[in-house]
Image (cartoon, rainbow, N blue to C red):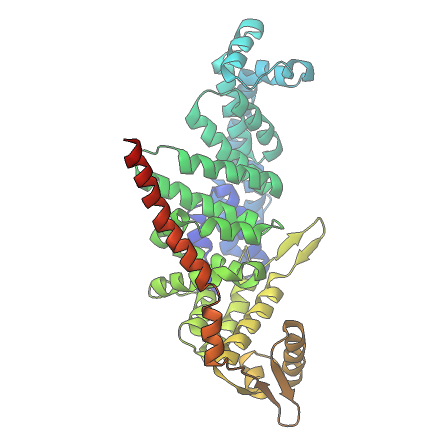
Length: 441
């Protein structure tokens, strides 16, 4: 299944801290050798301040309690730098820890900067020092404290570029702390900034959209309303164009969301068009399943791809865990995907067959005959399909109601009078208005 693993492509568009959850998942699934995962973690940690964690990984990888001297020196360097940053930001941090003083802050940033300078001798240097401290704490893995400082910095800062950078830091921190509601708010905030900001080049704006979509996967596949959220975002023209330009692997997640989201089934037809456009550029079992079913009408191919889809979903860091609902329940996404995928196969098969052998249909659904018969029976009842099961012959008979031609004509002419009236009105009223204007002249 490593052939279909997207971790390397996803990691290229993520902050290195966001890659750790992906590696943890792969380590749990044992998709790669343990040593490779640990070495990958060490390489990621090399550019962070999480020295203690790096030491633990090093000892696990090499089976020893000794750590290299450079790691020990690096830890001392990090502690010294942390003390220096805390000292530089201390006046502002002390101010923000006093609730009564914080109440004096206003939405007007210029007022806040002036008030802090005049009354408390806190200037832009201390404000920027708090940003540096928050970023340093984030690199240390202290996400809660980094979040507190970044929220306060965004209220006070007048540097628009650093404000945007703080928003990215807040989004990453909220994701890593699994605060999905807060993360969704930050995601929407960044989307507004990206869509409205003047970038130095269209390519830069495209890259920001690609980053945003990759980071959003953590939220959309953990938030209870994520299935709607990913469709709403990824199907917007500007974001869909970004996917087709430089992130086609994200179509896997769009396809999954479309399959499992029964309320947004109307997006399936539009997504099939995208698959047809990109079928020569992407090879993913989930998109190929839909291609077999809706483009090629290849039911045998769809059956084989469905078996691949099950393995792909179980081994995907975003799809394999399911979607949280409330505080405790996790809905297995694979169960919903298979249920809806089988429903797709059944619907398409019934569209082109009148008498269906249940044994053959069970084979295409990857189910036993008795399971398929019970599943079809419940489906016919719940969806009120005009069909019946012949248990003796083991067939499902679809009833087709052919509408009389005369009834079709009468139905199409029902609104003819109203349409004619509206057409005449749209012609007469402008003519009358023109005549009145001419008389007034």
